[in-house]
Amino acid sequence: MYDSNIMRAPGSHASSIHSYGLFGEASQLPDVLHCETIAARSVLHSWELASHRHSRLHQLLLLREGSGKAWLESDSMALGRHTLVNVPVGDVHAFSFSPGTQGWVLSLPDELVAQQLAHEPMLRQSLARAVAIPVKAVVASQLISLFTLLWKTYGDDGASGRSLLLTGLGTAVLALAGKALVEASSRDSDLGGSRVLRRFEALLERQFASAWRVSDYAQALGVTPAHLSRVARGATGLPVSRLVDARRMREARRQLAYTTASVAAVGELLGYEDPAHFSKVFSRTCGCSPRAFRASVTQLAGRSSQRSGSGEAT
Image (cartoon, rainbow, N blue to C red; front, top):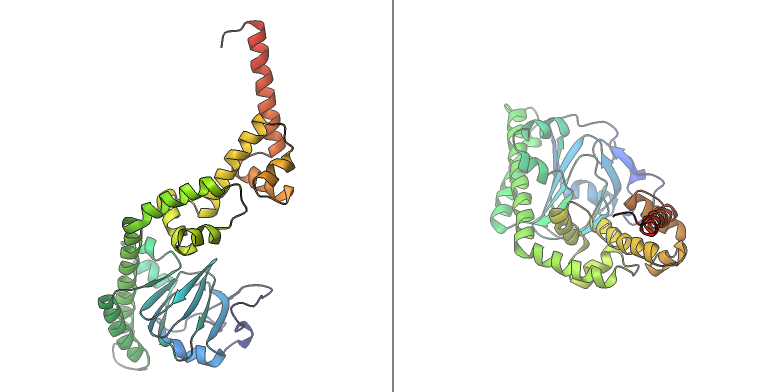
């Protein structure tokens, strides 16, 4: 049975994000795994699947032909021919496909994924990130062959060795997808990742006092927000938003320590229209409120002045 209430347009707002076993199904996966075509469910809902998550399923999608768009957590990604989509357990996702899009969706129980990746740390790490990537022709051909056989085997109920075949084929798809994601991540870092990071750092120095969002930085650099995020996380372990906040807060500390501008004025100088939001970001980044920071600096300066006046050695 399907719950048609979750199939809203991806751009629409829902009161909450639903968690399901398999797309609109309330129950958990009843089989070893699940494999179906992208069209099987998408065509029933105008080729759109609204924001939802799966609490115990890891999903892999492969577009053989067609196009669309994926919303993975906070990132939106274009989908095209030979695009591989990885959706880890619990990640919020939504899709909009062009009519007639061909491909497959593989849903794997989290227990199976954990078991098969127990001794593959690199694959496990690469598959823990929601992402959509175009794959090379040779990899696409391999995946298409595996998905085709997997889909046919899945539909062959009661066949001898079916469960064993499904597990083996599902594991093969998982391994090949993980390998492609590892190579893509390495390629991003090696081929231009450091160059993008250097350009971002230079741009940040010029724009940190503005109210630019991550998408603004990405657009100015000529890359997607998702790519900029991958590069930043790979080099620093932090998302772009935190790097921007850190640079703005460094300037905020300087302004609070060496000028008499009010807290609100300092926040406005750095692009924060709401003083409360500025204080919240400052507290989260620096560990105390702007007023407390200024008070501590003033107190420290007073002690230093007293020691200097009394002739104490420093």
